[in-house]
Image 1 (cartoon, helix red, strand yellow):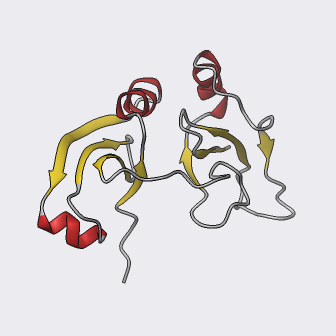
Image 2 (image 1 turned 135 degrees about the horizontal axis):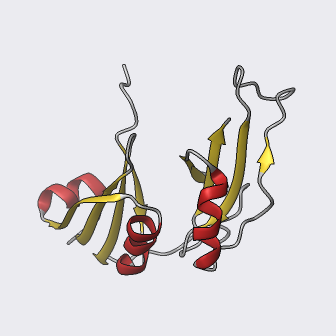
Length: 151
């Protein structure tokens, strides 16, 4: 039934800063930049008089990231959104070739890791003959990100 995840939508406060983070720092390719409005988006979202800027970004392989900034109506940010145990959609994970290559880029931008890089215990979660390594951080607006590699 489901073929694959098409995209992840991230509602942002500062489109320029978030685009720069995901595109310029992390190397995602920007594929579209547009504004949406009209009856169709009002009906789909259940909101009135929607006007929003949208940027689509794509990793070298895999799903797209859709950044959306609502000019109208503006929204609110839930408390504790960046905490790992907050209910609802909590984080998304980027698979990279080598976590150790991404860490200096994050550090240069002042992005703090929530922990050191950890090897996932194979006694709890097995990935065949490879070892998964993970680390969490927040993007510039506090959204929780996971970085992972498999060696």
